[in-house]
Each structure stands twice: as C-alpha cells, then as structure tokens.
Length: 109
Image (cartoon, rainbow, N blue to C red):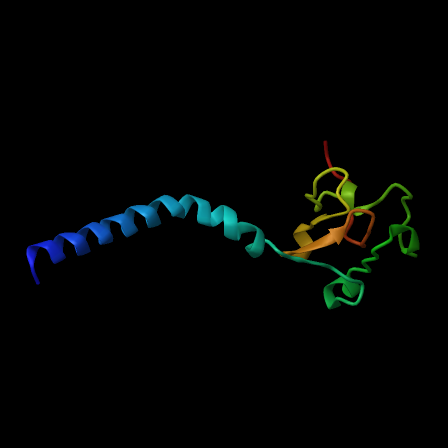
C-alpha cells in the first residue's frame, strides 16, 4: 500500500468515526419513539380480566366511587388530559384515563 492510499483510508476512517460519534446522541431521539410504542390494554387481556378492568369506568359494576377513574389512581402516571397513560400494574402498556379496575387507589397529592 502506498503512503497516499494509507492517508486516504486513514482520513476516511476518521471521518466515519467522528460522524458516527456525532450521530449517537440523536439516535436515541430518532429511535426512542419506535421503542416506546406500546399497546392500550383491552378488557380481553387476562390481567385486565383478573383486575376487573373496564375501559369505561361507568360500566364497572364493582366501582363504588363515582369519581374513581384511572387518571386519578395512584398507579396511573399519564399526562393530564391524555386519553391513555401508563399504569404500574400493566407494565409496558397503556390504560384508558377514563377506565377503572379493582386495584384503584386514590392518587395522593
């Protein structure tokens, strides 16, 4: 290999390395939404059935408190006003903000 070919290959390697290193912080942002794609829990889900989960809390026969909804439950961590949000009981999935299950505990604070 001649000195010129070595310099060209070395220069190309450095350019690719620097370019790749610069792209790493953006990779998480670009891929984050794809990785965060989750499903909304349905009433047919076995865990949902075990907890008596209803997508519409007004249709839950066991619900005693008319103000009890997933969005004001201690286990719910969705954004205010969102239609769905994460629940600690259904890890990796979303529940309806207006849903309810037998594990409902009033959110503190």
